Image 1 (cartoon, rainbow, N blue to C red):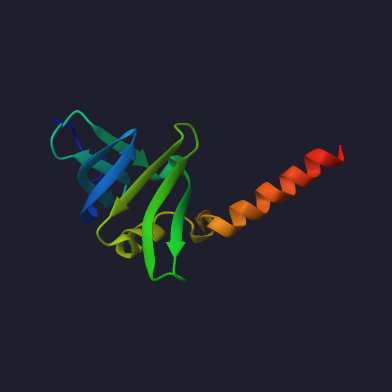
Image 2: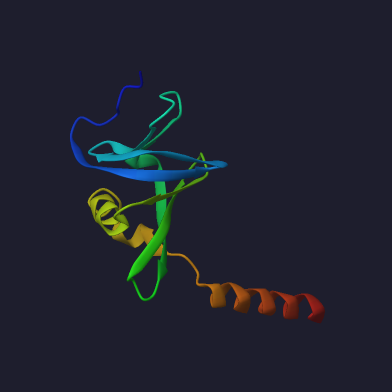
Length: 126
């Protein structure tokens, strides 16, 4: 059995982790870090201490009415993507431990297209 890194738990909620294949389980947010535990296989878990979190990226749609997924970018281990039942509640719980300036919105679909067209234009000029 996996031991939690948290001594005080603020929020536990059902969630999905997108790690290659989708894993269903529970997110636990506490005083020492962010944790994901798989429902079926106890060996599949993700533990991210708050010191390791570089930024939190939220995918916001319809001007904040719907947040389908969010990602945690770490300093060494890469990016982990999650979705949950109540993402606003999860992001509010994370805001207590992560600097609000490190919590950002992801680019919209049109922003990605705009960047792609600008980069094509730059490549042709050279």
